[in-house]
Length: 154
Image (tube, rainbow, N blue to C red):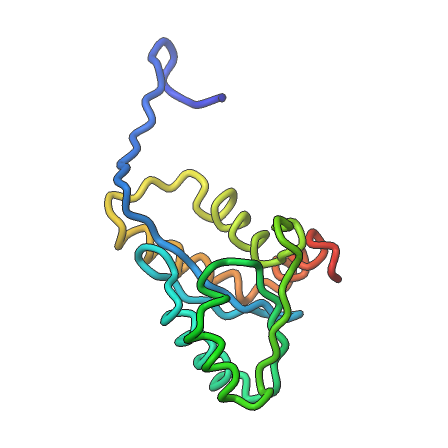
């Protein structure tokens, strides 16, 4: 790894690490995306909350393509989807195929480019910066298009 420091001095990378984390959920259309960040893991109740927000925001029938994450298969999620009488249709990606999921490329862009060298002091700072970077990228359709192209679904 190459790093920078004054000549003759060993570079020191400060990293504030604890075991808490921020998780994200997103819906990616052909030209844009909607997302939410959560402290800790995304839970089944948060999946239902996100689906409700998508439905309210988009107001058109939706086809959602999901990976095999456990919250996607929860009974509460299935009950909510059944109550919509077909307004939201679900299909699943094949198991162990993250390379087919365009949202994975959005997260990769966020981690490897937008906040690659960012070292937050706390979880709130990480959440704020990640949210701001994702919001600014919503105005760059090339990022969304690149996610679809990399997933070979464009």
